[in-house]
Length: 246
Picture 1 (tube, rainbow, N blue to C red):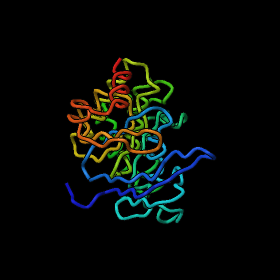
Picture 2: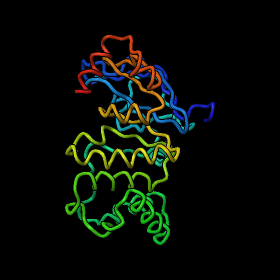
Picture 3: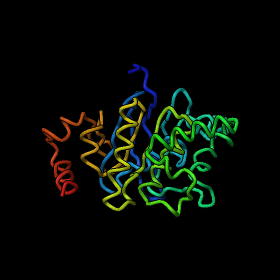
Picture 4: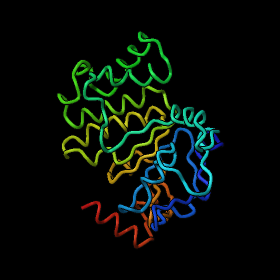
C-alpha cells in the first residue's frame, strides 16, 4: 500500500439548511484498501461519499482525490469523475439500451474509446460480474441483483482508481443480496480501492480493512474489523451492531 493517501478529507463540513450533517470530518483512504462506513440513517455517511465526487458540495474543509482537489472547476471535475466510480442504491441503467450498450456508453462518450475496444472491455466486465448470457438483454428483463451487477460493470468500465458504493444492496430482495456482495468481494480481492456504505455487517467483517462508524455527522470510531466487532468498548456502537445483527 502506498504511504500517500489516495483520498484525503480534511475538516469537512456540510449543512442542509439547519441540519449540520458533516462536522469537521477528517480522514484518509489508502490505495488498495476497503473501507466500510456504517452508522444510523442520517449520520452523514452517504453525504460524505457523495462529497468525494462532488455530487454534494462541501461547505468548508478540503477533499483531495489522487492529487485532484474537489472543487467546482469543470476540467478538474471531469478528471475527478473519471477516477471515481460510483454505485448507488438504485441502478440507474438506461432502459432503452442493452446490458452491453449500458456498459460501453461512458468509455465511448467520456474517454472517446474506439467502439471495438470499448465493446471488448465491456464484454470482459459483463463476464466478470457473471452475466455473459445476459449481454443483449434490456434492464427490464433482469432481476434487481442482475441490474446492480450491470451497474458495477458500468462503473468499472471507466477504469476508476476508486469505487464508491452507497448502500448497493439496500433496494434488493434478500435472496439477491449475496450475488451482489460476491461480486464486490471479488473486486476487493483484486486490489480495488473501495469505500462502501452498507448495513451488511458480514461483508464489513469479512472484507473491510477498516470500519468507520458515523454518529451525528462525525466519525465516532475508525478501527480494523477485529477490534470493531470483537472488543467493542463503545456502548452506542455495541447497541447499533446488536440491532443490525438481528
